[in-house]
Image (cartoon, rainbow, N blue to C red; front, top):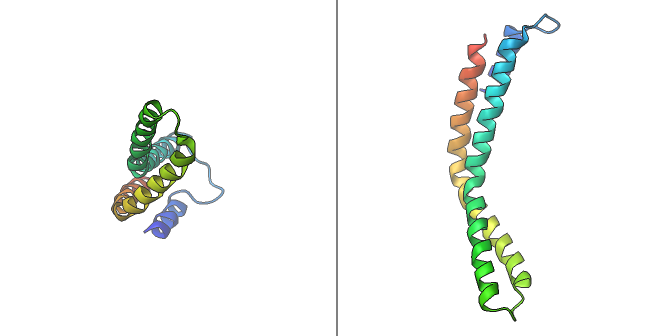
Length: 111
């Protein structure tokens, strides 16, 4: 699908031909916006878990000031982040498939 969309762009805008920047600029902005939304959807579970883990470790540091939270917190947050990223990879295929369908429609619209 991606290669087909790439080939359609070369049919729509042949190499070394004059280009009207208005339509392509709108398409580029739309594609960048779509990719930003996809990146936030992928990273949201890990970012939320990191926020909650930081808050929990901060409260633990306040209640136990003699305990060095930095030595425990860094590996715990790394393990939490890697675990959640691994678990969220199951839903990543669905998000990528949906995003590729949107990009395919957008690229076929310029032809």
